[in-house]
Image (tube, rainbow, N blue to C red; front, side, top):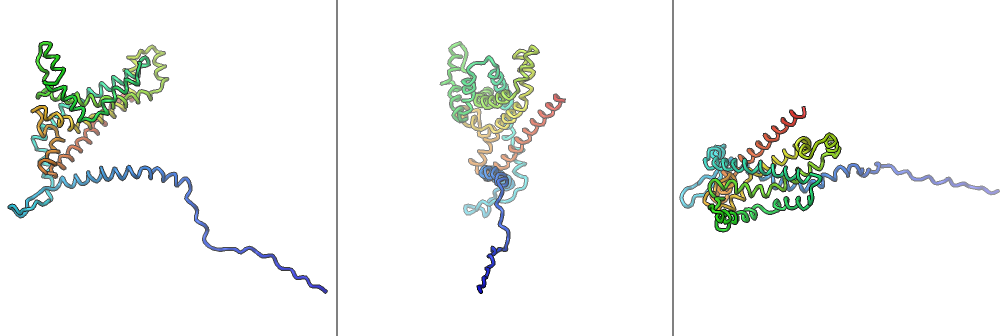
Length: 324
């Protein structure tokens, strides 16, 4: 008699332990990607903007004192409170500099915005020809560095090299006083206008291109001509662009430095403190009074932000009033 034995089937081993970790989803990786791209820009912004602002603000509350006296005395930095700010706000040279800056801004800002708006409207007319060439020609001066532009215009202003003065003398007049006490404001403003119109024009022109064509078609059906389109449709719809360019122009006016500094050797009417930034440069690098320069910088920065906010607030109120 034969006996048959049956071997039971092997059962798979069951492993126990923690469940495998899930990989991060694509959605999470996608959310983190923009921040990784922004990280280099944020680092540069903090290092070159935030840190210097904090340091300048801290330095503006310091001052230098001589400790020890005599030849062996050493200069130490001590806390000065608001002394630097009081000195800055009561400095007659700084007040005169702000006066010069105001006259320059009254000339440069409105003319720059007016010409930029005019050129943008002309280039937006359907009948306009060679618009690409015109846009490039108007924009090119913006690409020229301010110092080079000031040098070029400076030679055009000098009585010995100015073709404008030569023409005036030929016609029986005298040399045009571009660089005297009254003409210097228009001469410097002209350099800024020549270089700034192109940038502002591009912003306004881009805003004009964003207006839907249906609005123009409806207005033309009602009998509107190009002048009426510009005054009643285009200009009201590009007010945000005008506000933006206006703020940029105001900030640029408050930062006036390169043009008067470049023209200074050509005339006797520009002093070392002709505008606030020239005063800051003198205190920081010529007289080695860094705390005073830092205080002036903070005052100018706060004034720039306040003036820009004021312009923006007034424009928003007027825009809201018109829309209502």
